[in-house]
Amino acid sequence: MLKQPQIFLLMKWGNFFSTTIGKKSMVAASGIFLILFLVVHAGINACIFLNDGGETFNTVASFMSHNWIMRFLELGLFVVLIAHFVQAMIIERKNRAARPVKYHFSQPNKNSKWYSRYMAIFGILILLFLIMHLSQFFIGTKEALYFEGDPYHDLYGEMQEVFSHGWIVALYLVGLIALFWHLLQGFQSAFHTLGLSHKKYAPIIKMMGTWYSVIIILLFALMPLSMYFGWIS
Amino acid sequence: MEHYNMNLTLKVWRQKNSDTKGHFETFKVGDISSEMSFLEMFDVLNERLVSENKEPVAFDHDCREGICGACSMYIDGEPHGPWAKTTTCQLHMRAFKDGDTIVVEPWRSKAFPVIKDLMVDRSAFDRIIQAGGFVSVNTGNAVDANSLPIVRYKAEEAFNSAACIGCGACVAACKNGSAMLFVGAKVSQLAMLPQGDPERTTRVLNMVAQMDKEGFGNCSNTYACEAECPKGISVANIARLNHEYLRAGLCSEEGDL
Image (cartoon, rainbow over all chains, first blue to last red; front, top):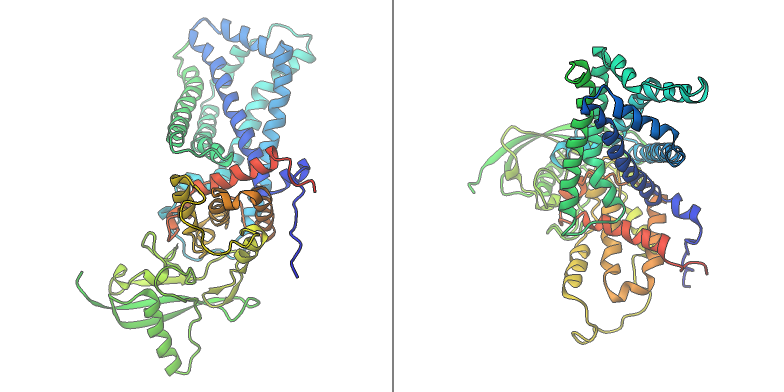
């Protein structure tokens, strides 16, 4: 007797996201959103290099925290960030369960790049970094906005205060190094997971990913360093 | 290449069945010819074990010419040993030196339970194929050449994907125990051809659902599978699988039967 073929009910969104590929496409899409966010973040922060005592930077920062569109996007950013992390952790848990007995002798460096195997570890490091980062700058800004009657908020001054401590600058550099490896693998990986692999475009995406990771991390690292060493006034 | 003989120390995984815990057993083998295949070296060891009234080491093998995908073995930290694009039966002892210690383990994956020693149960792959890796109509006799036009590059790509022998090295190499390269190849070989087109949507969805059910991990794009695949199956097949899944799940209206 012919076996009735199983038909997967693809009309339901829940079914689409229940599979491992569905979950991963969510991680990839949210990852690309976060990649774009970092460009905006780095661009705004780069205003400190204008050397005008933080005037431009504070104006832009004030716009970002008052403009309604930006505040709505900010909410979206948190949703995307949480979705990225939670889905990735669900996937990582399943991955670890897929090999209950480990190899006793393994040489993974012979077949893959070391940083490509530690995406989850870098992700957790970045999350820890974010908790520190948000408690230093984000929470203060929101307090001033909602509870202190919205006075002029000198975020630039706050940055100078925070980055006057050597150990905080060191922690920022550690966080950025984790982010660098995460991006180096994540950028091209996201496109691959979304099914975009093309002989003409794949090498371009890979090259863009490398340059993006290097430039964005150097730009971010320059901020605490230049404040700590007093390269900008 | 010059022929030489060698003495080796083998650390081999011994496990009675799926329910028991395994352990390593160390064997010394002498006078191993550099011209032998890795499996022939195991034959020599097993002959000796049988003559000593001991249990021979169980391992999978069939064609011994690199095309069946039966031989497995995780040799010195890599599936199928140190040579690229090589099955264990095609790995020759000239890959090793006199006095080497070689560690041999079975594929380790939740979806591939150990049956005995170095043999694992790879029927999870069969069940994935049964879920959709086929064309449901009888194709009859071979049709005349070019009666069904297929773009040449698609025919070539489909053929490259079809080179997968289902050995499971991709799962064994992957840090996540993911079967995406295997499933990607099996979905691709049909998705690119007109014969596979009518079932394109349901095929990918059913095969992915079965893949998840078997307990394989997820792909995190380390590309270890491609590096260890004896047939050089490209990770482009994984991207194609993702593409096919997104196409079926997001773009197709089929399935609401």
